[in-house]
Length: 272
Image (tube, rainbow, N blue to C red):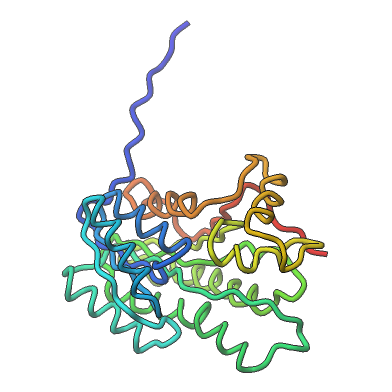
């Protein structure tokens, strides 16, 4: 029997690239920033409030051999988004990768949601991502990458989750349309929709996705419940999302465009 030896799969290296990752002091954003740094990209770590978390991420990226800086910007404010990009460009000289990751969770029944709550959620999750994309269009070099963050909630109807889910569905519509506007710059646009991932946000609110759960559930309880319903028998980790982002950002992902990537192992939460 004859065996064909395949050529090694190229590592998704990002040497010499510069990435902006919004909301990268914690959670999935933190994992993405660190992973991009491990693969050779210099990284702009964005935070809204906690400089300590952001500086910790900067330190970890530097320890892995890449350059990083932390820049404060509230992504719900378009003027601060513009300043974030201007500062990143001034520091590194160019921008190749933009990961629009900032977002906020929300649960609330239809009769309880105030106009103020609606505006807060959409200002960050939806409007913020739109104006990150607008600045990405302005600053990204030819051949760059834009990735925007949706959620599995955009695809699964859940009680008391309409506001959050709606804010994420809009992002997927942005992505489909923006590929047509970014194409002439040879910039790909992809939207990522994570499922259950172990983060501090999931630790605080994950029980709300689970039938019969209550606030007394610990992060361990939540993880066990999700893992038991996952074919891989575990929950998602920020690194799982980060590795897909790194692939899409690399030359290996150059032909992947205009597609909402649902990143889960079919462990979708169940609502009743």
